[in-house]
Length: 208
Image 1 (cartoon, one colour):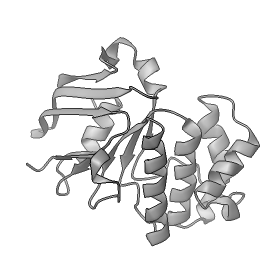
Image 2 (cartoon, rainbow, N blue to C red):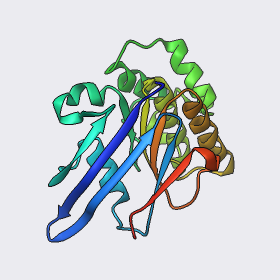
Image 3 (cartoon, helix red, strand yellow):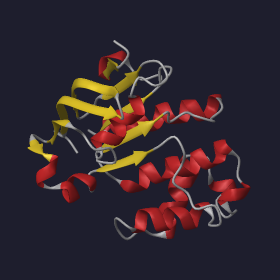
Image 4 (spheres, rainbow, N blue to C red):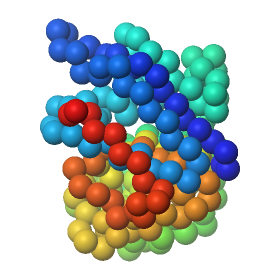
């Protein structure tokens, strides 16, 4: 993961007549976290979804390791994981089954690796229960285990501490620190800081 760089230049996106992204530029390198800040509706989620190709850009380019992502979208997508505001979990499957399905679309994964990831995120105690029976915070912990299992350099996170208590918020900071220590990079839409050291933190305010 060392040496990975995500760069975007002059990103523009409209929602009907509303100009949401207005010439956004950004650059994030391995070992760095970019926090997206701004009022509700400023475009934080829109930018995250645009970076990973879920929202169509009217103008601008995104580069992964200085290559236009449009030249190899499949390769770019294999290098990232996007965790939206709502965890991508199937309600009738257990946490273990969800992670096996989610990660299995990328690579083969062992039950032991899934269990280890759930233990790290505090999800081991309820891992066999159907997700529909879990609280919002418990679902978030299962989804965070998915970040670890993805084993990719780029994390795109939309309010990663949503529905988590204070210990869960500390967990997110620890997971991010470990990811950055390993040379990974992350972009997170936030309403408050994630507790990451200022030396590895950058901020982009979309309200400005």
